[in-house]
Image (cartoon, rainbow, N blue to C red; front, side, top):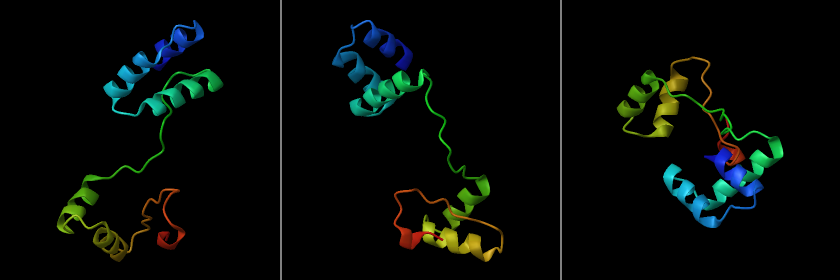
Length: 99
């Protein structure tokens, strides 16, 4: 979708409506789609960036259920197992919660 929008933008034919339709289709804001277009222009790549994330295993999901959905309790249980487990922390997390 971004590739087609980028082609229309480069041809001077891009309006807000197609951007709005793409945003609604993929469940993001219009601003996000405009940002994708700017990134595609800057990098020459219209593919979505690959996000580096944390994959939750079935075992961790099971432990979370046993912990009643409490992430704090999940962390305590994982740490108690003695494994080399590090809870993922986003850059937006306050420094005081980082371990």
